Image (tube, rainbow, N blue to C red; front, top):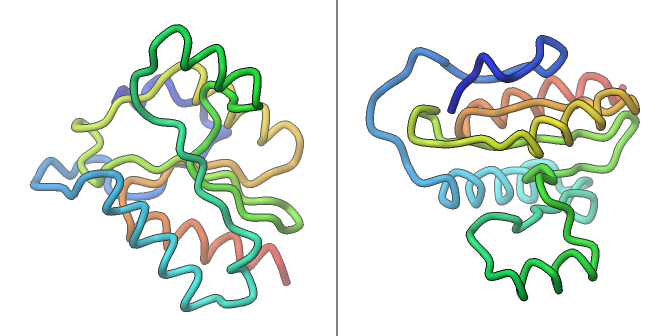
Length: 137
């Protein structure tokens, strides 16, 4: 992932220099979602993971678009004031990629007042969530 593409307005959580072994993004996402649901029960109905990864055929992409799946939509959204819009990548970000659409989505969310950020792995996502919790007070 090329972190230089991410504007300064979008905070990146995690160790950008880490290059060691790293779990798959799905594993990190599952850990984060379950941590929120079990440690912060008041948000269990307010967090959602948008399954928006993977290659699609032209026909699948057309159907997905027609039912509201937005290209580049962030991995997690948590309803609050402000909302949290979080794009998760692997802890070793060089094993991940990002698209212009993902960056555009985060920038648009930020411009509308959301806390929009990148998290490099589960621990970074927890840190972002905890920072977001402080805004909820």
